[in-house]
Amino acid sequence: MNKIGIYPGSFDPLTHGHLDVIRRAVKLFDHVIVAVATNEAKRPLFSKGERCQLVNEAIEGIPGVSVDAFEGLLVDYAARKNAHAIIRGLRAISDYEFEFQMALMNRQLNSDIETIFMMPKDQYTFISSGMVKEVASLGGDIRPFVPEAIHDAMKKRFPSQYSPGHSSHPLNS
Ligand code: PNS
Image (cartoon, rainbow, N blue to C red; front, side):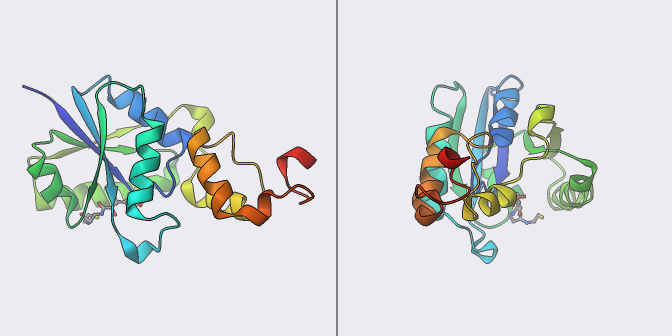
């Protein structure tokens, strides 16, 4: 039986931390689906299509992983995909409360689907998509935190911050 893991998230944008969790998850499952949540209430920087495209570029060359978008309840999506587990990354104790609540809510909604937590490499535990967006919007260098394709996409989203002469431009530091 093919073991399928669902790795859900906003991925706005995907970071090295997410990618590290994906690389670890493919060792445990026959197939991992990176499930991009629609959740427009979060007012994402990138559209659902853009986020899927960026994830797709980042996972190129990693066998056993694909990307998909979903709407509605995560457990319903996971059941439709015959998933065995939902995978979530845990970085720090501050993630725990929300993740614990979400895992138990999902279990209440569908007790057949387990949630498993995976820790990214310690050097990535401080990275969050929110902080990456803030750093990029203020002209900081985000290359250490995200794959190249995502750096390029962010550069297009905040062009003025990347112009030569900007005090925080990577080439001026
Ligand atoms: O990357 P994020 O924003 O922490 O991901 C959160 C996400 C998308 C996994 C979560 O909001 C989610 O599962 N949304 C789908 C709606 C749902 O099932 N809600 C009930 C469980 S909290």
